[in-house]
Structure formats: C-alpha cells, structure tokens
Length: 245
Length: 256
Image (cartoon, rainbow over all chains, first blue to last red; front, side, top):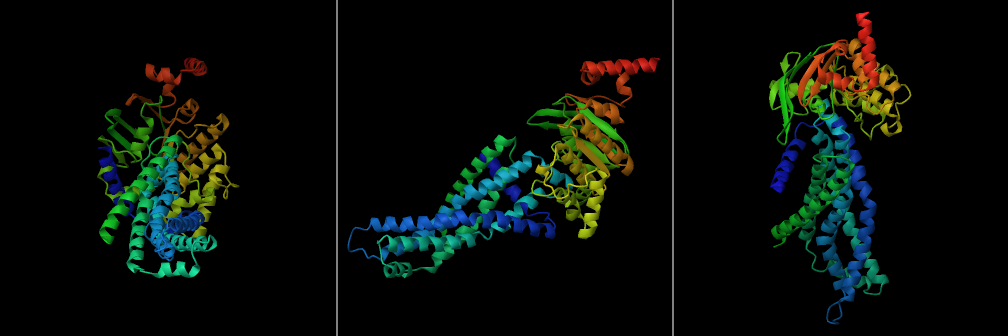
C-alpha cells in the first residue's frame, strides 16, 4: 500500500510543481544555478567514465572475436551500437541517479530538516515550484551531456582499438558507419529526455517528503538512488519495447 | 488580532491539539508556554497555516483563514513574519540576500530600494557588518537577528517566533527578547512566541497561554502568573528553586 500511496503523492507533487509559478526574475537565477550544479558539475565524471567505458567495450568486443570470418570492422560497429543505444543514455543515467540524485535529495532533505522549506511556505512561496521546477528545466539540458558521453565513448573505443592493436583506424571507422540507423539516435534521445525528468523529480520527491534528522537525510538519499535506478531501468524497457520492436 | 476558536489537530490518530481557544491582541507580545510535547509547535504551525486543523477556526483580523481564497491566503502569508527555532536561513544565500528574499519574491522594488530596506532592518536588529556573510559564518545570536530582520522586512501584521531563545546564552537571549518586544510596540503588530524560557515569560509576557497535553490549561499575564493557584502552571513555571524564591519575594513585596 505504501508504494501506491507514494506513487499518488508523487503525481500530486508534480501537479504542485507546475502550479503557482515563482517570479521569473527569481526563477531565472535558480535555473542558471541548477545548470551549474547539475549539468556543468557532472561533466567531469561523465567524460571520464564515458571515455574509459567506451575503450573497455571496444577491447572486450575485439577479444571475443576469435573467428577469422568475422570482419574487423565489427569492433567499431559494436562499440557504436553499445554506446549509442545503451551505455550513454542508460548507464550514464544510473550514474547520474547516484551523483545528481543524491545531491538533489540531500539538499532538499536538509532544507526540510532545517525548516527552510517551512520558511518558504510561510512566506507564501510555492516551495515545490521554487525547488523542483528549476531542476527539471536545468536537467532538460541533460541530452547535451549524453551527446558528449556518446562522442567520448566512441573516441575512447577508437583510441583503445588502435593503440591496443585490436583494429585499424580505417576498420573502426568503417564499423562506425556501417548499417547506421539514424532512428537509433532519436530513440536514445527520447530515452534521455524521459530519464532527465525522472532524475529531477524522483530524488526531489524523496528529499521533499522526508521526515526526521540528518540520519534520515542519508537514508532518503539511498532510497532515492534505488528508486530512481529502478524507474530508469523499467522506463528503459518500456521505451525500447515501444520504439524498437 | 488573531482569534483561535476550538482548534483540534491529530497526527496518525493521536490527538495533539484537543480544542484550544484564545485571542492574541494587536501590539502585544503573547507567549505560548508548555512542556515539550504539549502541542506548542503544532499550535504555532496551525496558526501559520502549515497544518490544517481538523476542527475549529482561526481568524486574522476577523477573516476566517479556511474561508479565504488561495490568492487571499497567499496575500495573508505575505503579512506574516516567522522566526524559526533554528532560524531557517537559506544556506546558499548571504545575510543580505536572506533578508532581501521576501522583497525580491513579492515586490517590484528596484535593487537600490530593496538594498535600502535591507540596510534599514539589519541596522534595526543591530547587525551592520554582516551583509556579505553566509549563515554558516555567523553565530547563533546573529542568525536569530537575521531571521528577525527577514521576518520584519515586509512590515508584517503578524510575527510568530518558535523558541527564539533556544541555544542562546542568557545575555543574547535578553537582547533577542527586547528586540522582539520593541519591534512589536514600534510596528504595532500581533506577536506570538513559543518559548520554554522563563525569563522571557517574566519579562515580555504581556499575555501567556499555557498548554498542557494539547489543552489550554491557563492564560493570563506575566503579573498574574506569580499569583496563580493553577497547579499545572506553578509546577511548570516554578519548577526550579530559583524561580520559587523569586515568586516568594514577589508575593511578599505585593503583600508588603
């Protein structure tokens, strides 16, 4: 029953987030701050992980091709497909659920514990709009992060293939270009856009409705990470079923 | 003036407020006292509209809160100032930005007009050098003064304070008490304070409401509290030997 109750509260929260908008001059500053915290602040870890995981995907693929009949360009092909279809949109989103999600839950949760949210409400501010809406807007730039993750993942795979001696540059690039379906990129960005909304709202929900003290803020961050990841995996399955089959 | 009529509030089936009625007059400092768990904070948050009572009504200058439209409630909120127990200052903003926040949110004043108002209220609470400090860089007493400055920056009609002296040394506590009393007189506002501090009760309690187990057990002034025969109040207020002696001296002086 508690799950149903939480789902209901989550949708009621969304209704409040989009009602009684905060003054634009305030909102604009908040959005820029959130872009800095959530998007710019995540670029380092996303770039690092993307580059090296792209490299690992290429090496693993190359090492598992023992049959001489399988063309060498398959390394580039497999790297492209893995990175664009799953690694960049889904794997990076799970990492972001840990990094950005925990940050959102703990910052809003701390505001709840220290009565800052009550202070906003007493002043007549719609605290959900003030706190959550700028995060949703900021994270709408998340597909930009995923574009960079795709690019760096493929670059990582390309460099690992060449300098590891697993493939030539020409073979790898041929693999990148062969059987390219542009809709796969559309599919990846549709997923990313939906994930960005989940990344902004589920952690906010767990932070906003938490009760207790500092210990509960930690627990809420963990719960938020678990549920954000679960929802991302489920939505990933549903979108894949809808768009690719 | 705030008029409270028979408000009741429960959480998870446990009744916290069991029908409280009282009145808080304009231009007076009213104190709500009682043991921990007596329902003081729930009572204050019900006055603020943060909790909705299941029964009863709250009237602000004759207007029943629950019958106001959303826009009217929003407007009423801008006429309220609140000083939270832990000050509730926004961590990411400087002292100046914290105080300016309600002005930026609800007025169309220019930056210079807002800055002038912020300078004025910060000076009023005796904070002249803290504009650019973050809350974490200030002492507990300074944070309380910033919270008071933020609460009065919009010229509120109603000022609510939840344990404004908690965590403060006795000297700073007196400074905060006097400041609240002066502001109440100066701006002729309705001030309601939740407190455990018996010094505040004696010094600034123009009206005192004593809550016990969710009921209003007694109400009166700081003069009357010395003479009351109500055992619940006496046990709570004069629980320390020092206050018992103070009471005896006061009563002897009255008799003499």
